[in-house]
Length: 59
Image (cartoon, rainbow, N blue to C red; front, side, top):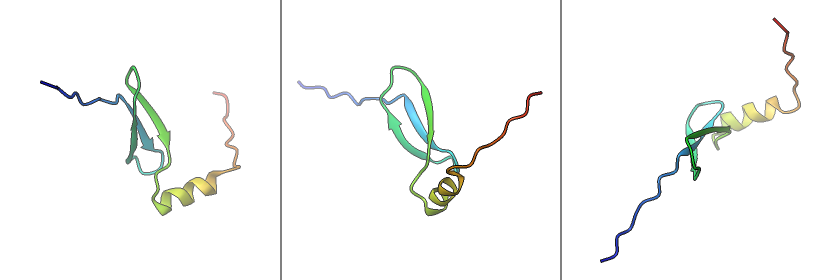
């Protein structure tokens, strides 16, 4: 008898703007990656942020 096993992906890709699940990734450990989903408002936010440099002040 043939037994099929479902693969469990331990990595996830989360939208950096709306925190929705974008996709899963096959990794050897639990990992969270951030990207941008296909929602127009998230794409617009991402596009607006391109080229901008954020300054960080030392404490």
